[in-house]
Length: 396
Image (cartoon, rainbow, N blue to C red; front, side, top):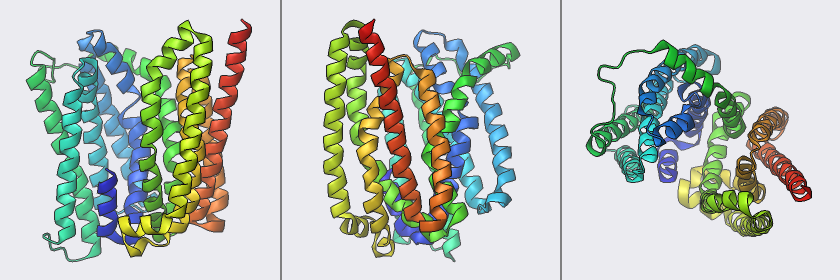
């Protein structure tokens, strides 16, 4: 997807890339709450214990969320100044992806991750291929706006392709798994499932506000070019976050076991891991900051050269994000889900306030400054909770 966004920036240029990023981030905030409804973790858990009957009511509940979210987004189009064709295309893209995620739950619960991998890879290759054709000029379009619309339609088509692949693989790999044929709406089942998923909706909502609101506010308070420059820089930093994700996902099972059976081993392991991630983040920060201009020009072209200054500033977030990612995920290991929710809500509030203050002053660099401060606050809050809980555990 990094290469998809890189190619998209070259196709659209800074201003239209800013429009695309602004619309996409807004869609992701709404889709992350109303389209998913916090169901993915619950469905995966239930399917893993062979409770396959949950699949149908979950799909009906998801369909209701998609309808509600779609209507809400259509009402917001004139308020937030979204291009109509692009907005509708990306909403459909998000809806189709949300249904594909349900089939990913099946693959994960049934220990058939190769089905998810095949779906994701084929979907991304399809999208990259369509955008490559668009970039090379085989599709002659009359104006830049039509190119913007064509990009949205390309995303929509890739989501449809991914859903078809996921459904086909499910039928091939799990022919006995219940589908939609003959499904009836069980009102009581849907209501019970909604009550279970409701607490996770809050986590999803504030999580997406925390991660995506900077681009949305930049689109509201600044120009399309500034959004494009910021979005290009953000994608580079976002790609580097693969490092803490891999390390955290690798350590997560081990840390969970140590917290239960060996407190001293847990303490040593998490201290070493945080120190290692901090050291890696310093190297990444220095590398990106020192080479920001050639990185931006090589990946996105000279039109995006103003992104280099934003990238040099935004790269500072990795110092907080790398160790912070491990610490926030560790809150779940410690059984501090409520603290995780409070941390996410705090981050969302801090991020909104800082963006509203800094963007009018410094434009895209203001959004970068707000992100740095927010990530520092998240890391400090998570570290405080972990240290305090570890002291309580040690004294007990």
